[in-house]
Amino acid sequence: MGALAEAGAAWLGWDVAAGCAVPQPDLPGLRNITMTPQKYGFHATLKPPFRLNDGTMIEDLENATSALAATLAPATFEGLEVTVLGHFLALTPRGDLGAVHRIASGCVRDLDRFRAPASEPELARRRKAGLTPRQETLLTQWGYPYVMEAFNFHLTLTGRLPDETIPIWRERVNNHLPELPAPFVLDQIALCGERTDGRFEILHRYTLTG
Image 1 (cartoon, one colour):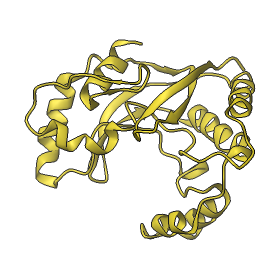
Image 2 (spheres, one colour):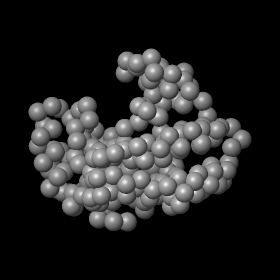
Image 3 (cartoon, helix red, strand yellow):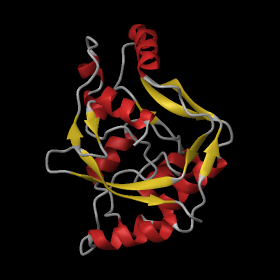
Image 4 (cartoon, rainbow, N blue to C red):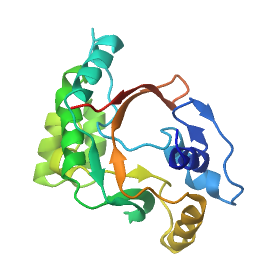
């Protein structure tokens, strides 16, 4: 676990790798603005969370993820920067993102046989965002509208923020994070699971060796 992962875990107050809470910096309001992303921990989603199909064992998913990782080459891009996405802050990549899109698309496509179909309430909730025709197609096919060419690699740092507070929190998070790696190399994927308390933790890491 490197300096960036440790800083991200501390910022959110949850270490997804260790599966435990960690002290947050003493910043007024930090707990409130990180309550939403805290349960997931510091991470970048490649395949959106899903429930296992009936009759599917977690061991089957683990074996398939290991096999997938053996076919995927690492992705390298210029670096990371703190960005405003809608009304929240996240780390996003700079440079050519073709390789990371290839990894994410592989995860969505090759592991989809383990995903239980999205329920009608889940689909209705996604549609409230006002989807494009292509996003509706992606939602119907993959259970999530922001995958494949609509994918946006990011590591979430806050929940929704009032517009007037965004510059303040952007400065605070930049002061908290270590020097961001440049270039940034994505050379592992991780399988995460939801605990009974609703928080996420890493089940296994897989090195990309394709």
